[in-house]
Length: 459
Ligand SMILES: Nc1nc2c(ncn2[C@@H]2O[C@H](COP(=O)(O)OP(=O)(O)OP(=O)(O)O)[C@@H](O)[C@H]2O)c(=O)[nH]1
Ligand SMILES: [Mg+2]
Image 1 (tube, protein in one colour):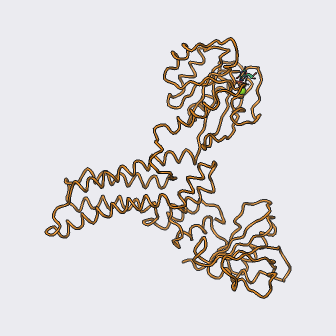
Image 2: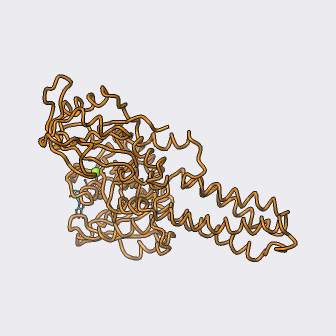
Image 3: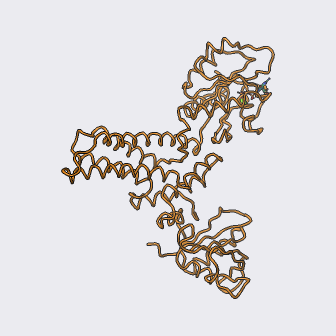
């Protein structure tokens, strides 16, 4: 099915020092030979060493020089796709790249679909499906931590977890089959053993889903809304956390009227900060709309930092805002700790916010911000222990497969001893099949097509 030669520009559009045209398929090196004039004229690319880089010119159909390039040769099966691959390193302007691409197309290659190189790597057994998906996560990683998780995945860490699980379930399935087919020789199913295996399976999938929740935070990031009364220092906080002068800061209450957004990295978690209009009842139409938006943001955000002001004290409005924030996503930051005359006492804080995490800070003096970052990390990852060794990425598709697999395994666990063996076998097999969807062993072709369509062209 993979007999055609595919080609695409693999580098992003725009100017750059280098741009790469990538071509894969049997015959790709021969096409490259037809458009290439090497400096060492005596050697064809097809006669060159594997993994060699060859300097020369790309030629137009009439023989004019298009660009000086480096041709990289990777022969099947030792290439990304498992097929013959040529990577043409052009200069990174779009004209040279396009002309080079066109030459390959003219000579019989066809334009690759998004993700088709990686899809071929999967179909040629160079990558497991979960590894192929990790390639996408690597491309999209926003922080080093997210990248690390994706790289773990690419190196096959979750593949090993799956293989272990599958192994155990296959063993159990064999036990069931044996008791079914040779009851006289093997005897009845060892129910205790069966429960043990199924229980372990459910537990493993459970901790896997837990790791998934963690990984999702690192991959997708979270939204954090900064709310509070006017003039408490919300915009100053956004500027301090992002180390930019992004939002306008003045001592006039009501400075911020629209939502100001900025992306930061908190201990490897991509965080979208959203500074809002100070919340107060007002007759000013523009400010009113801003206040309304702030209320919407509280509902939408994953975390909300309520900023109070040591100089201003705690007013009814503060408590009103506080009560609109769901407890599990609320952090209270009491700002302007640097001022002498404080209008908020420790007793007041303890009494009014007994259940919330309260941080004393001075944005001006850069005090308390570390504690805030710690608290953000802690709240996001709370309840997800990090010591299960499962440093893996799990995407939506894989998560669905895990949930289905767990349901089958749980069902089987409950039914050991209660139902005929062949019924039990159906659930065990169901759990196995769902695991196979993660590795790609039991996936239909159209599903595979969909997965790779999320990729960019040239990857
Ligand atoms: N002393 C002191 N002043 C601060 C601190 N943080 C902010 N301020 C001052 O407080 C005033 C208001 O700061 P902003 O960041 O504009 O406050 P805001 O909450 O965004 O205000 P609105 O946009 O009007 O809702 C400015 O004059 C800041 O310089 C702090 O930690 N200590
Ligand atoms: Mg502001």
